Length: 440
Image (cartoon, rainbow, N blue to C red):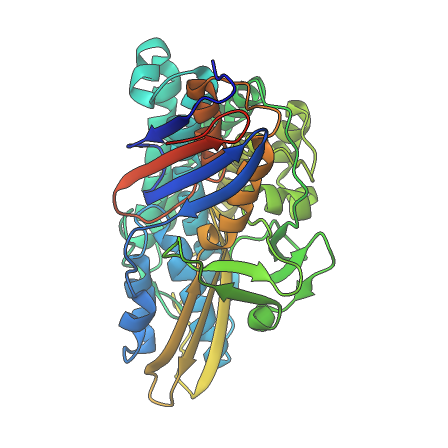
């Protein structure tokens, strides 16, 4: 147990349940956190620079390589931006196929996080491997759900990792009705299993911890927004995607290779499942809405540890909406609309599993990309992650190092941070100083 005057350092060299490479540094003086740094030290990959000079039709294939977990999000935001630049809108069955492809990604990504990355925190297991020894059915269901998400992406996108069937204006090929109906039985099983998942995770023990967030997400008047919409917040923001740079800004902090995003004149904000649920919860599919009510959560829940419940609810929603799209599906006569380039600036956004993903491109008359900007959700959430940790520690400094470290790591994983799509470790150091501890 910690004692006054004791110098301590808590370090975690390998945290395998986040995507990418990063570190966390906390300096604690007495009961207060004096410094927090969410350090993303993975080298920049310069995707915006890679895109410059490339043809606008290459953007969905290039940006898909940014992430192996959520490539559809990058493809969707990029094609939205290119179509916006060209003055083209896509609707009907092509738009429904985009949503179906995206729901496959939500099912795959959310199942991975809920079961394999976050549930072990709540049940006291170091990883899903150890959890599988005691709860084989839980892990088996997780793998089956994840496989279903991959199968949907293969049926619509051509393959599950970095889909190859997405193009500006639609798809290279539309799936047949039979190809989609082959997914129906598994989706029906998945919807029931996802409802059971909501019940499972709602029964976890959650720390008493609520935060005051400005929730930011897309909003669509007719549906729980995923592929497009306006950007809104619970504090009055209501803007077209093209106005993103009028209201948001990015800045560099010396301890992170990922830019921090903030709302101008206001500061940090939160994107992701909790924001979507807060702003669009009434538009969830009926079974998802019932599952949320049965779990005892309502739109506006502000305990970040309960994000695991919201993600499970979104799996129910994704399954139900995927079934609805497949039931009404008729292959379009042409799987894409023609998009011709023009000199313009295009903006696009969509709801990645981890939150709002914004793209902006400047295109010349020949269709070559002159400038690109990509703002991923983890970048937008960095300041909120740091603030969560800053507010979580006071009142808990009496905890022993192992317990405090465990809970801080869990607080980070609440965000399902995609630090990158490369390796997987985060180094965590807590320095205690002052009357209580002084770190070495």
